[in-house]
Image (cartoon, rainbow, N blue to C red; front, side):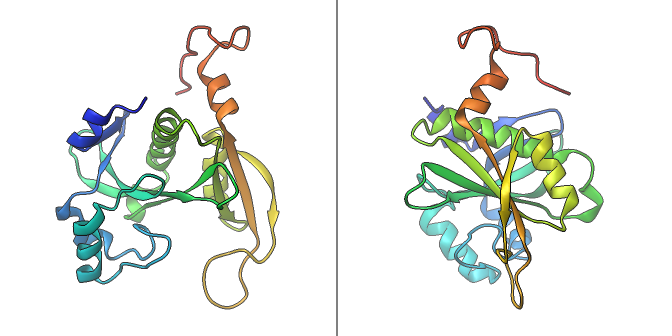
Length: 199
């Protein structure tokens, strides 16, 4: 069951480099500079619109929402993660993420954030059996991140990229609940001792 007391306090998960928490009002001016990173259906790049959405929902619902990625030591806002239903007929969620400052990228922060949030979602939402990432094929760092986080490439979605003009082809990556469970437990017994996490 999810730890609702932690969620009410705003804290979701913490790792060596980053922590995941609910978004706060003080985060909004920075987040507004990055369209579609707090909602997949609305750019929310206008601060007033983002603030209204935050006041109405906290940018968090049962099967969709956004969270803040922050430095585990200083609490500095680094970026956001979001999740949303991948399709009405699929028992799964799609993830998106961004590290705002280019100087913070390539340091393993996004990888740790995706791993932490994936663990949280699988632990908290037992009716969902897969998490997926849709990544434009040219974005090598992003699909390598997916693979480091235990996501498996399932195929190519042609002309599925986001944006105007001719959409880019995209890879679809997935991590299933079975994948997640097996990574956390001994393959000899589904109830075995947890594995030591990879560095």
